[in-house]
Length: 382
Ligand SMILES: Cc1cc2nc3c(=O)[nH]c(=O)nc-3n(C[C@H](O)[C@H](O)[C@H](O)COP(=O)(O)OP(=O)(O)OC[C@H]3O[C@@H](n4cnc5c(N)ncnc54)[C@H](O)[C@@H]3O)c2cc1C
Image 1 (cartoon, helix red, strand yellow):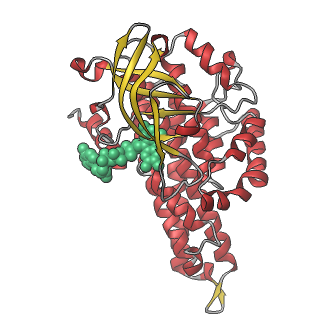
Image 2 (image 1 turned 90 degrees about the vertical axis):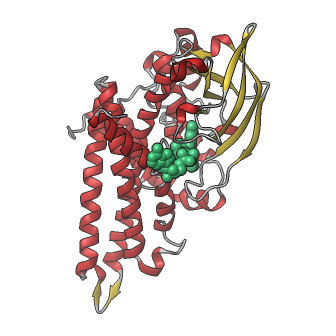
Image 3 (image 1 turned 60 degrees about the vertical axis):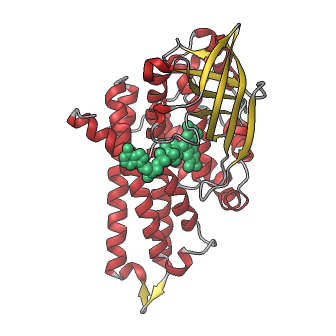
């Protein structure tokens, strides 16, 4: 399963070089300034990895899902924010590829081809609903050739810099979740009121926006699929996003372990490098074992997506996200511990990695919700 083919090997080698040369040196200052990673957008687009999942039919390179996961992991080892840029770029288009008609695919997916720097985002969450995603209060009503959307959205990644967003709203609340629909919203649409970009603990080289939707006018042709298709569309997109988050978490953990190990090989206490002290060896053993388990589960999930096993892949994505993000949190915390006081300082990257890792336990659904999903699936009790 882990045998890379020639294409994967070449892609990963080139990503590794780009990361070492252009992404890693920028990671600390991105975190410090909290600015959007425009350099990463430029670098990724120039190297054809801003939208690597984009189908060939729409001008993309169409890497497989496992290859995409490996790219995300490789970038996250050095800069989790830059890896999140790729994940966010994949979310909106994923929902379009999965559910939209050919007209919308031609119109929006082709804009992402080649060295395009078009940005996208995905907005499900609202300030008053988070984990209980399907109790959305945003709704859409038909008025002539348009829908008018009313409501709020928050934590929309890439929000205020995105050229188009995929948002979800009820078109018929009386049908429960079968009344949710998905829409493509163009930047600058009348009624899309940008309230603010949110401040955050980690992944600071990214951007999350809050919006008011006030008579937001969306052409009827911008509905993805039929009315009511939004529920499955959201589930499938979130599943993919969980898988990508798991890859990001594996990358963060691997990066933190490498930093801690390299430091431990140099740091001398009690007359020998701290690698000679058994408690340090035990922490490193736990780190490596956790990372390898999380990576294997993540790759297995990626293969399920590629094989089109959507339902099974959804549950595996929840497991992969749960295990990989908990591993990332533990490994980064232990990496700080291994490096002692210096680990806590901004001179080294592990304190940033620890803050970045925290988000992987929360976004695309918290780990408590992942456990509920897995438990409900296995027991059949909802
Ligand atoms: C930086 C960031 C970026 C994000 N990006 C996006 C994005 O691009 N698009 C998007 O749509 N969303 C995005 N999100 C939203 C994210 O998915 C939600 O924050 C997450 O799903 C949790 O929702 P909440 O924050 O409202 O927490 P709540 O749902 O209020 O949960 C609070 C606590 O209660 C627990 N809890 C809730 N219900 C249960 C239950 N039934 N059983 C057990 N425990 C429960 C949760 O696990 C959590 O610990 C982002 C969030 C953050 C922080």
